Image (cartoon, rainbow, N blue to C red; front, top):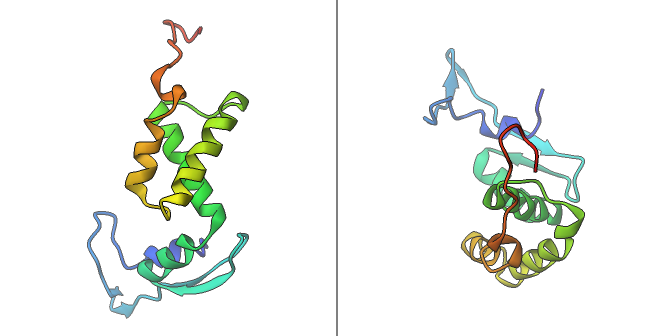
Length: 121
């Protein structure tokens, strides 16, 4: 079982909301564990509120958006960039739009490695 995944149990693959499955009520409750927060939740909205209070999740969000925006995984050379991005994200009270803007305001965003055919850099 996936304890966090249970919070999304009310949603089908296509994203439609449901309250029953095969005539039985859906239990979307669970427990956030192995994190800097440990808390029970019931449903996706409650889960989102719990995760929003986690410093680990906030750092993960910033790193994941870094990877997506830059089209690569971070390296040791990106430590300063990630520190600045995380500080700006925190200063903006974890506003996602501010995070995306801050990702475009770094030197790392201006340059990217060109990968030659065959994967050699």
